[in-house]
Length: 313
Image (cartoon, rainbow, N blue to C red):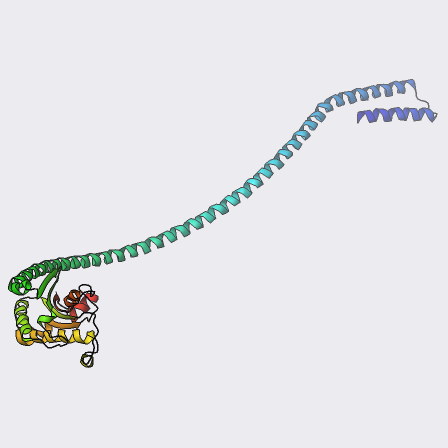
């Protein structure tokens, strides 16, 4: 600014000179001193202004730097805000998921408790049923042991009572587990091709029946068997096949045991097997003779209908 004033003063002097105006020496000296003072003031003012300009420049640079840092920090802050929002969303989602998991877990635990309660109740019922079955099995086993003991006693008594017939080969007695059978060859009971018992056969059946009547807790099944020779001739009119012959002979023995011996008819049954349950091969005449037989079989009693129904339930 001072520099501009000094230049302006010189220009005025120069213009005055050109315009022909005459300036006194005194005025010139006064103006010259004034110009020197102005120049000195300018230099001093400039010297004072330079630090200020430098400070201003420094401050401007610092301001720009701060602005740059502020922009950077604002960008970082915005990024942090975005990340924080994402994290908040994730946490909220996890909280919802965790709440759902807790709810589902509680429901599952409730169902498990209900199931466990039901299973415990069923287990108690099963244990009671097992105890009942175990007691029934023990009773059955005890009864079975008693029956086997009784069956062995009966076998021994039959063998002793029919010793003569057994030695003569007319009677065979076999015991297999809980089954006892008395085999009588048909020739001592029946004539060939007939189903009526001979007098000698009735005598033997009475003797066998007397021993059978002593037995308790068994039913008696009479089984008729033949060889494999087909029925022929006029006999075929009465017995079309060995089925009819074997069944008729078994039924005839049942009648003797009921009427002559007095065995309870509810314990008696008959069955005809024809030629289809051979004891030995039919290839020889001896084999055929052995297969023509009456078997008296001791079997367990039939279950009563009420007992069978209860067992089924």
